[in-house]
Length: 292
Image (cartoon, rainbow, N blue to C red; front, side, top):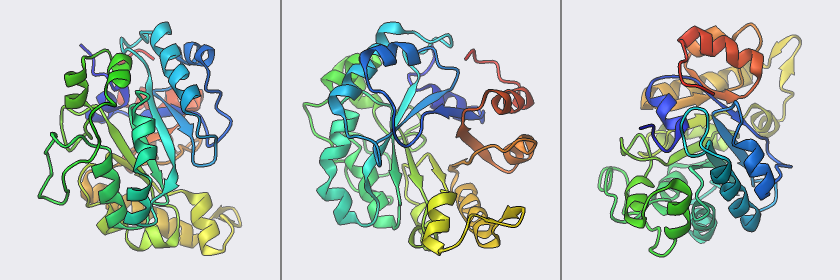
């Protein structure tokens, strides 16, 4: 049987993973959920950092995915990852906004992306508030006990196709828990985040990270491009994040560029926005066999 989380199944095989959906404007309705169940991307990104924090809409969208499923790859739904509104500027910011993570996860999504992950304490809190206390991998080895509460597992268990206890067992971060079906990611997208990236990415429980060139350039007060190429400071930032990902066994997210797809894959890029032509190049390069 396939895993619940198609993105994790692919990443565990060192396959590339492609997402559909931007930072705003995603239609969270039951009908759009039914339509998106047939996406050729591997996961759906729902932007709530800048888009609306629409829990009733997310609830209906997830139900639409289930009702139109399974996917051609045999998964109950495509993977769904939400960009949370709160940013990772401090541990206090995460703790105070625990309710956001509980609400998002309570709709049955498969992962959360934390924007502006600026320091290790914020990231540690992020992992902890997304976990149930009885899941103990990593506790005492960089993490405290999870804080997600009882009572919120019924709806997501129905979306995932498990009973309540099964959901609690599976709703744990991969690869920290090899059997976990929850995927947590970080955006390292400003100077403060960059300056602590090595320590931040050493926190257990994170599956992937990206370097956010737009926000990174803005935080540096520079243009993204210098002449025909990327600004040297941005190129250095990209390399620092990529190297920190590699050092900690974390998958690297970056947009594949036309003509550079194979080189980027060989350089460690494993997650990217979906473009049919570029995805075809990378999928052919690695011999993708899972149906889209």
